[in-house]
Image (cartoon, rainbow, N blue to C red; front, top):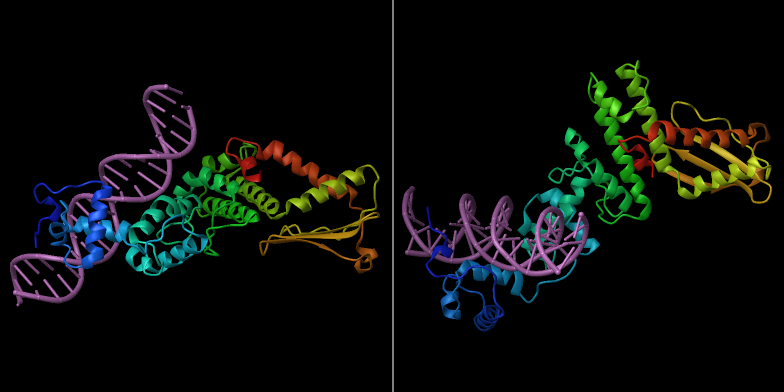
Length: 330
DNA sequence: AACATGTACAACCGCCTCATT
DNA sequence: CAATGAGGCGGTTGTACATGT
C-alpha cells in the first residue's frame, strides 16, 4: 500500500485543539452530520487533517460522551470484558455507553493495569503472577494491602471492603510461600532473607520449614478479626488478674492450624471463637453456656496468656527484620 | 519558591481491514 | 485481481497539571 499519513500534508495544524476549532467542527457536524472525514476539514474551514477531526469528534466533542470518574460498576465491567476480549478497546467501549475506546484504554493503562500489577496479578492473563518479578511488587503489594482499596481477581471487583485487605495479605503470603517452595533445590541465601533468625547450621529444608511456620502464623493473624484479637487479649488480661472463669476446648490439631477456644466469663456469658485456615474464613459466635460440655473444658488462662506471649516473642525475635514480616503483620 | 518526579489524558502515528474502482 | 482510499484500531508520545523534595 504505502499510503502516506494524511497528516503529512503540508501546512496542516497538529497538536491541541482550540475552542474555536472545536466550535467549527461541532457546527459543521451539527449541520451536515458525519460524512467524508477526508473532505470535512476543507468544508468546515479547518486547517486539520480528516483523521484528526474524526478523533477529536469521537473522543471529545461527541454530545453523548460521558465525562468524569469511572464508576465501580464500570471498572468491574472493564475488568470482566478485558479478561475476555483483551486489548480490544473499541469492543469494550461498545459495552460502556458514553465511554470512548481511547478513554477506556487510558484508564486501563494509567490505573487498572498498575493496580493489578501491584497486587501480583498479570494484567494480560488476569492470573496471579508466579514469576520472580513478584518480589519486585512486594512493597507495592504491602501498600495496597494497607490501603485496602483494590481488587481480587476472584470477585472481579475493584472496590474492596475494609476487611478485604486481609485477602490481599493472604495472597501475598501464599504467593511468597509458593515462590519459595516451587524450586526443588531451595536457595539458602534467598530463604535466609525471609528467616534471618534461623540458626546458621540449619539446612535449606529446615529453613523452609521455619518459613512455612511463619507464613502460617501470618495467615492466621490475617484471618483473625481485630475484634476477636482484642477480645482474646482483653480476656487474657482480665484472667491474669483473676477476673473470670475460663474454659477451653481441646487444643487444636497441630497440623492444620485451626483451633476452637471457648471462653466463659462470669459477667458476659460465653463466647466461642472459631478460626480456620482451611477455608479462609473466620467467625466469632456466641453460644449459650448450656451448649458447653463440662468435660471438654479446661483452664484457658494459661493458654491464652501463653499464646500472646509466644506471639509477642515471635514478633520481636523472629518477624522483626529488614524484610518486613512485621509490616505484613501490621 | 524552585525544581524534580509522577500522573492523567488528549492527540498522534502506523498499521490493518474493507469497500470501491 | 490489484491498486487505492477511507475509516478504524491499538500503541505510543507529548504536555499540562499535581505532588513531593
